[in-house]
Image (cartoon, rainbow, N blue to C red):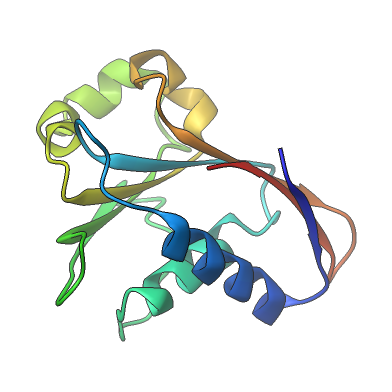
Length: 146
């Protein structure tokens, strides 16, 4: 599992762009970037970098209270970026109520899932895991399996 240390927000976004450029459509179902890490560890900053790499111009914030935000993509292999924040969910069954199985079935969806550990039991084994560790105000350690 590669381990990268980023020293500022821009470096985290650059890493996100590098990772998203390595992704291809999954053979079956959506591609999932499963983000793990404590509050303030860099998950949303990473997501902003992914969105920039995919040409999304609008401001990306964590969907903590709305749970899910969907962004249509133009001229990309992926047709939608679906950003889910499972922080307020108690289990995967809560995510199922939001039509997650339909989202998961579409191989043109790229799903970024924050607080993955809250819904891990319903995810397929093929998720891409990205772990974030807060080191100090500017520094993050990021390990990933893509």
